[in-house]
Length: 485
Image 1: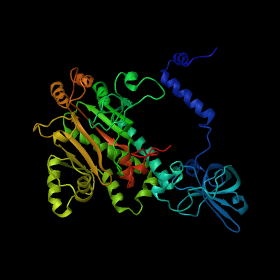
Image 2: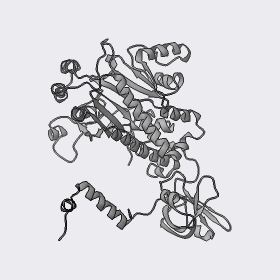
Image 3: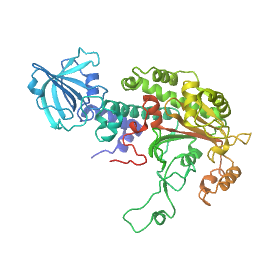
Image 4: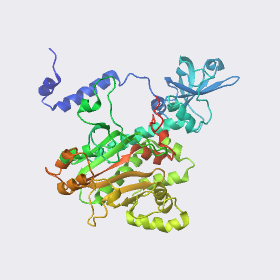
């Protein structure tokens, strides 16, 4: 008779979780983990000199000499590939850049400085051929603009490979920060009937292959989300600390290197937050913790971008050290910019009541403060409807974090938690009647002072790598005039 997990746990008089952990240990010992080919990273880090190994991946380059041949093998798990040594040059006769292979041989210590191990090949099997004449990624420097034109192959390039691994580690670092601080992740919807930012730059969902228009399908007009903030606020009314890591969409025709039509956002909402400095502390801790995680766990890929870049190295050090980031009010920022305008001659004059332009943000972060700076308390007229007014009624309790590179990295605010004040604001802005009643009702049933923020994930990676365009940071860039693959 078979014993179920629950019966087994009862028989052992132990909690079910204890029984499951025991079973997992037994499974791991019996089956030895995943039955996948080992990665180069695993073999280089754990393999012993003289050990027989079998590796697989793609050939980055081949050099054939009179009595020996060399090839570089990569599989995406490391920044630099592993050198393959072939004592018989004939073994490399069919190898071409880009082909996929499986190679058996002995692991050996490498005399080179850029790698600790190399493989002395004894057998090579070509899995997938690559035409040497037409393969676009030859062993030479390719511009990032060229790589965008071959987006289906650019993950094999060293730069995009490093960016991709940094994205992976940064996401892990973000999740670790939030989970270590008792935040609960919420999967906010991609389809929504609301425009959180109120800017109207949304993509409208449409049905295809049906006689029913979208308005009939949902009973109303539906958009792709520009932010999950409003939905996070719903769960912040029950879970106290929540966050998301979701795609967002914006129909903005901008062609700058800072804008995409589809991008990733990390957003958080915190209940019972009564002052802006508390929220700023959370934002700063998130950026510092995530960057420290990259330094500790993605050093090789990070060094790839920091090498010979003194300004970027200094920025990463500033992001990770314990000294608080600079913090000024919007009014102080305007004063700094107006004094600087006498020398800088900005294209847009800094004027109180107007939003900061990119050149203003760049000056503050790159020239004046030479590092991250929070700018707080913007005029109410240029900020979103949900932000909490300050006692002066002219400004709102909000902040933007400006950094060298992408300029605005994140934005956050305390949220209006008064039903009456928020209703007056919504009515004055002409939102569709009743469309935000559910959001208003959050203020009727156990409202709390609360606040939150959102950070563009691609902008964070852009800041860390120093790359000029977010189009080289997201795997498949979508922007005005371009949606390949």
